[in-house]
Amino acid sequence: MKEKIVFQHLFQILQKYFDSQQDGAFLDYHGSKELRDLLQLDARSNPGDWQEIFQWIDKYLTYSVKTAHPSFVNRMWSGANLPSLAGELVTAFSNSSSCTFESAPVSTLMEKYMIQQMLDLVGFSSGEGQMTTGSSNANMIGMMAARNAENDSVKQGGLFGQEKLFAFVSADAHYSMDKAANVLGIGLDQLIKIPLNRFGEMDVAQLEKGIAGVVAVGGKPFFVGLTAGTTIRGAYDSIVDCLALRDKYNFWLHVDGAWGGAVVLSQKLRTKYLRGIEQVDSFTFDFHKMLGAALMCNVFLINKRMHTLGNVLAGGDTSYIFHDESGNDVEDLGAVSLQCGRRIDSLKWFLDWKFYGRSGLAARVEKYLDLCTYAEQLIAGTPELELIVPRTSFNVCFCYKTEKNKSNTLNRALRQHLYKKGISLVGVASIKERVVLRLLIAHPDFTEKDIDTYFSDLVHVGNLLLREMER
Ligand SMILES: Cc1ncc(COP(=O)(O)O)c(C=O)c1O
Image 1 (spheres, rainbow, N blue to C red):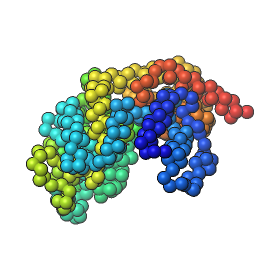
Image 2: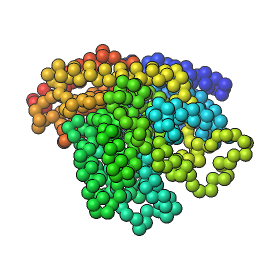
Image 3: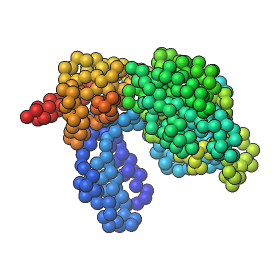
Image 4: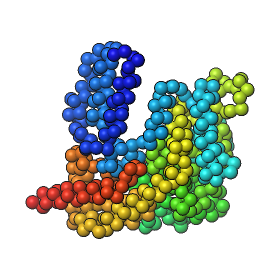
């Protein structure tokens, strides 16, 4: 095949895939052993053979999960917005790294433009920010900024011979906080997990108790990480209550909005869920989750109340790469990012922003919440289903209802059966030792009818499995 027609052929395949990604089953399931046999990864290859390359592409698409399918309700993302997919293709073709203006002038300006849009939106009047590789690393940068703001000498001298630093998050915070505490030398013992109230939010009275306890033994509470939309329950920790505590104890207040931070786009939902966000020290949210940008697309914002990104992240001899000889007034983004090479995520973000606008994205988020209300009502009206905890936002935690001693086994088996038969894929987690199925709606095409179909399939299979179990 001539290289000239490679793309022509590739685009035909992609178009066909795109057109059918919501049809049929969401997955042609094969266990790992069988899939290995089907793929034959170590089959002899014919270097330079494009037919062979297209066979690999065909295999890849045939056995992959169709994440844009309405039965894929497992993750915080589903499919990807078309403008952002176009952006991904363009950046893949032009293949650059957005660490310097020199090598990525347009993407640098786009990223800076988008960061400013987000700072204005959130209300960080003298803030700054960057795109990172995702909220996990954004949480780590938030904690790192807090650590360095607490003690400026840490960057140079390390964490030796100092009072112990303590970080606080809710018991349901994302595991990336644990990783951050590990990487940053805080230590998991100094990451205090605060119990939850009955809605799954951090119990602020317990937080204050924890902070006071640490202070009493000579420790330093330096970081409180709130979650805006916890991973399992979708709970929003109270920002305003913690702002009052911050005044008293002077810690860094970070908000992890990886999933639920998207409500910042909707004035109505921001007021309900994110009151006080403009006053926190740092905030992160993912455009690749609820807002549908192609993976990955994260923004980390810092409110320069205490520290700047440069203070925290710049370091080492970078003169070989970051030098300003061209007279441009643009700082290189790589100078203050964790890594050197930076994937270009700004074009897809920018294109989505231009295509949908704030109001289009806000409407999408509001629609998801309405659909969650619909799902909750459907569960309440279905004798075979049960809501496990009160729904406070976008996460619907439910299970197929049966006797308590059978519930966990049945629900795990139900999920596996639905998955392996290519019927649907839902998240699974535990809340107080109960297995819960976690429905997440994150595709703009999703409708009430899809919810009806999803639950009717689930109940049908649940009934069959229960009968088998009771036999
Ligand atoms: C609350 C929360 N924070 C952080 C993350 C990590 O996000 P990322 O995948 O962008 O690293 C997740 C992912 O599910 C999350 O739910």
